[in-house]
Image 1 (cartoon, rainbow, N blue to C red):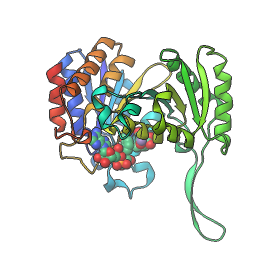
Image 2: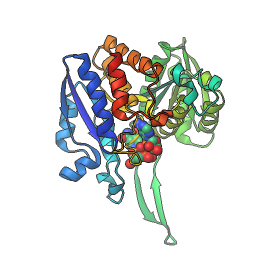
Image 3: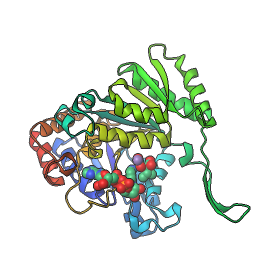
Image 4: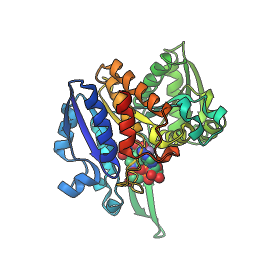
Length: 346
Ligand code: NAD
Ligand code: IPM
Ligand code: MN
């Protein structure tokens, strides 16, 4: 099995190093091939997603991704910015189904921004559509008739795009608690009206799943008021981006949330939901657990190594139980020490 390893920018290399140590310790016979992405790739070869990197991604059985984003690059034309690496990979490999599980580790309920009794009920999965929406519509800058600068980004979904993510979400709900909440803004947006209509059509094929609908503003509120009500949430690219960062703080830290981005055949890219965290890069303060848990998701979903995935997830839980706490979790342990704690259990 070949794993493409793209560490990226900021804390990317620091958190990736710890995930690699964990995978190496399990001795799974995996082959690794590294590639340049993001600002690091732009600075080295002039493009955030060089053709060689895309080639490794296509050949690999799975991709482990750190993070991209570099404030030095924010003045570049959009197609040269670091973020285009992750957006380009998602699009080029048709990774349309982004699974972002948020579950409280009982040991961490105290780290949540919510009251402990509210936080401890969280066990949800956000299924975020990743290939469409306002992210990939026509965009640009223009002048209005009276000479004002105007920026625009077209939001749209076609029914095939909604149908395939709806199937992913219903299937995910079937193997969880059988509840699916579709989050949209159908009271205002035509994109969302189509989304809702298609999700209802697809529901006919999943009579065992209980479907509900919620507007995104209410969903943001309910996620804080009573997150335990959610099993699977399915939503569009932009709403899913925002709600998943919010869910991370309900769980305890953005440094804890892993994700899988899958195509129709189970090939996937695995990454923490957070970014390159330039404010703490190079200081040893990054929590590597989201990346380590992403590696576990990779073993489970793309490489058929569920047992090894269980071992990693179990080791993370044990390390937390033993008191492993990085700065984001209120502790003082460095990125490397967090890796050490997981390795010690393994
Ligand atoms: P961010 O997620 O990088 O950081 C937000 C806050 O969370 C910061 O205070 C940061 O220190 C903290 N944080 C993030 N990850 C952490 C970790 N593992 N451990 C401890 N603390 C952590 O979001 P941002 O600051 O809005 O964006 C920074 C850059 O990252 C931008 O260029 C953005 O475009 C990019 N970004 C990339 C991805 C990705 O590669 N998939 C995701 C989100 C943001
Ligand atoms: C994420 C990030 C990306 C997104 C950015 C970096 C393009 O925020 O993976 O959540 O918006 O999808
Ligand atoms: Mn995001």
